[in-house]
Image (cartoon, rainbow, N blue to C red):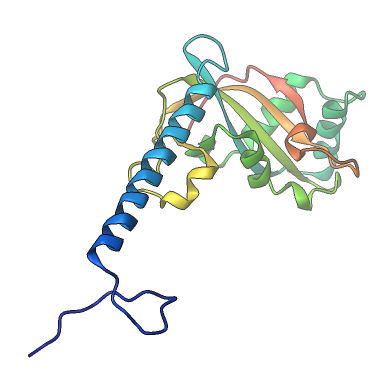
Length: 205
């Protein structure tokens, strides 16, 4: 007669099956942790609401963008540093926006500015060459987009990325475009992004 499969503990050297009571306790702990995790996430999301004014929130997207030439990238960095440049802020912002592939900015955003900084690959920034490390600030309604970890599109372990998934083709208002300026000082990398241009209109996800 075939034996029913048994669940064994990992620390019991006698390979004693886990009792039904212990399994029930474990299940209750998992459920409690899931409820607590959901509560924390909803609390954090509520804190982000109205960050861009009543009814709106800021979302962030970090990217690396190659400009046509190193010279153009240098002029844009000068604007970010507040130094004289051969470009206006509006021109610099337009040059960056025109480098977006198919005039689309991407579907994955976040409400966590530190996460956006990491996706801009700031650790490789040298302040030279034609590559710019960019952070876009988007302004969207509080209920715009969705969290892919709640829909099963992404596993729960990515909850700490605070992702806001924007359906492809939806328009996002770009509040500002910011360039990372590398330095040897300490502090959060997210605070080393400096604004280049504001109010750049809407772009598709």
